[in-house]
Amino acid sequence: MKFFTPLAVILVCVGMYFLYISPVSMEVKALVQKKTELDDVLQKVKDLTQKREEVSGAYNSISQADIDKLNKVIPERFDSVAFANDISTVATQNSLTFKDYKISDSVPESQESSVEQKGVTPFRVSIVSFKVTGQYADFLRFLNKIETSLRLMDVIGLKVEQDPKQDKNSTATMQYTLEISTYSLK
Image (cartoon, rainbow, N blue to C red; front, side, top):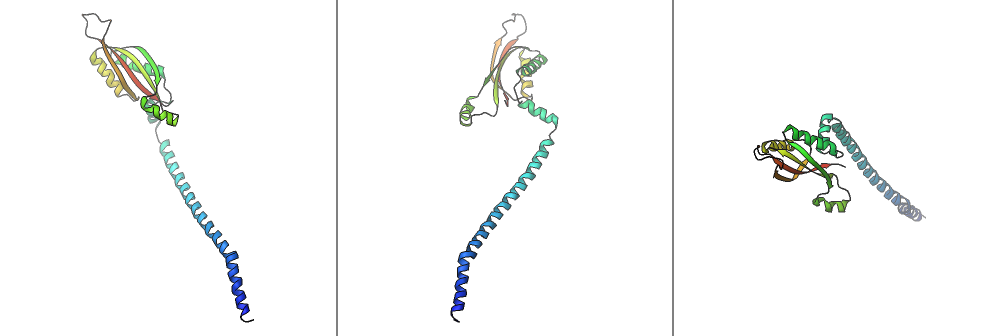
């Protein structure tokens, strides 16, 4: 009996270990690991919240004048009337006559493949063509003014011709046909 009691206690302890303590110990380890993962996620959420607040503060600190300038570079929507008015004003300021304003929407060839892959382009390209008539020096000032304007534009075509209405004795005025691509978000 002396031998049987310690053996029974040892067998009960070993049985308790394998039947109760070991599974509970594994459960506790899994829960500790899950708690560590959740703590990491919680820390990342806190970091992202702090970063969001920093970015939001920086965004809110942008002045309205700067926002207006950004909207001028790539406007939300292309306003063809306002664009024609702006170009006409610049042409008039540089002693040029503005006429034959035409507009068409286009997607550049380089983006056609990305359109097929993604389905949506991030911007819209509008092709604008118009004619201005005047002297070469005035036309250069006009181009310089367009180049230094805030609006994002690319001159994609230029045709220079003698003004058909010009008489032989007047100073040399030329007719310039410009084709410009301009961008908007929608």
